Amino acid sequence: MFEIKQLCKSFGPTKVLDHIDATIRQGEVVVIVGPSGSGKSTFLRSLNLLEMPTSGEILFEGKEITDPKSNLNQYRQKIGMVFQHFNLFANKTILENMTLAPIKVLKKSKAEAEKEAMELLARVGLAEKANAYPAQLSGGQKQRIAIVRSLCMHPDVMLFDEPTSALDPEMVGEVLSVMRDLAHEGMTMVVVTHEMGFAREVGTRVLFVDEGRIKEENTPEEFFDHPKNARLQEFLSKVI
Image (tube, rainbow, N blue to C red; front, side, top):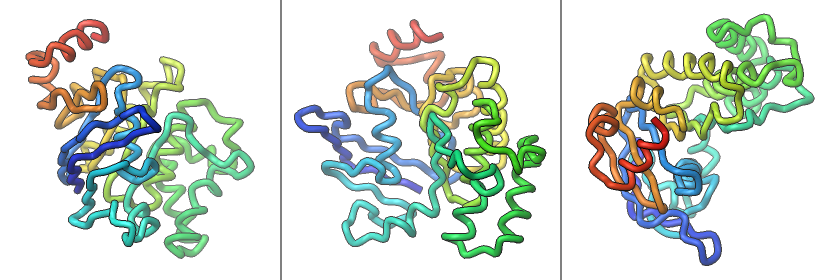
């Protein structure tokens, strides 16, 4: 799905990503962990060019998307993105939030888009909220809506940028449950998270990012039970 080669990103004199090489294969759930400020969210946002790399290449499904000639809008249609803070349109109902892009971008009929949106809402237990507005929902409900809104576009891959970090602890489980279901259905996912239990249980591979580099990557079992990198050992001792 993704091939990342020598990816660098700087903000002024500050180097945030430092020559990252990585591969993400179809059907994988790649979980990215690391301390705050390590560059993991910048790395994730680079995958759909919300952050433009300073140098390096990103290939998606064999095509170099960092090429200035690439069709960014066409490419982004294939990538779902879920942020920390939901990014729902406050002045639109949940159903309108979910059907806007399929109607405008995929040119679906209103009836077709609404039928699919209602099926997805039912899947996450929120069908009765179709005509509610975001302000009437809890944080966990908003994040579940944000996930299924992305699914309305039939993405090839889903990117999650700390999707539970803005939630109350009791709401975290309901969002992770939706993500677990997606993983079990074979959705390719790249997840930046602080939820180590999710990384261990659902991830096919875990990456440890520190100082803008991938310091270690491995299967969840090896990553958590037999960490090799000294900085990773220190990090895990504080978060587990």
